[in-house]
Image (cartoon, rainbow, N blue to C red; front, top):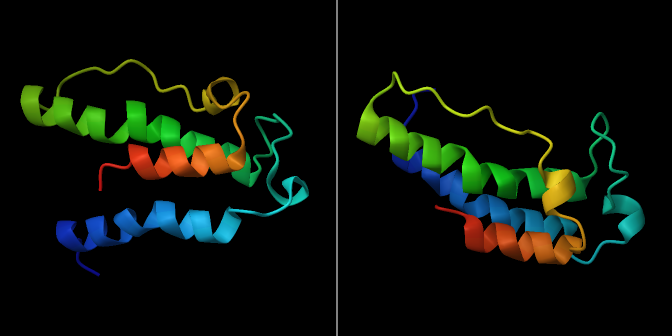
Length: 103
């Protein structure tokens, strides 16, 4: 399959709503975090996607487009969601993912 940007953004734009439909309203027993870096729950995955959206994917692409590919980036904290998501419900995170999405 050939990569086509517009087709990729179509599927990415549906991801937040799809996750909301799949996970919204489920019992915490199915979704809640155990705060285990090696065993992520749906809660952790959604928090990770929010962190990536805010700090990694689009911001880094914008820097590359503006400054070129030789730019060195600050290392990405792939576990930041454990701290950033504290005190939030899964529904809070799902709503935040929808508003954070650039697509």
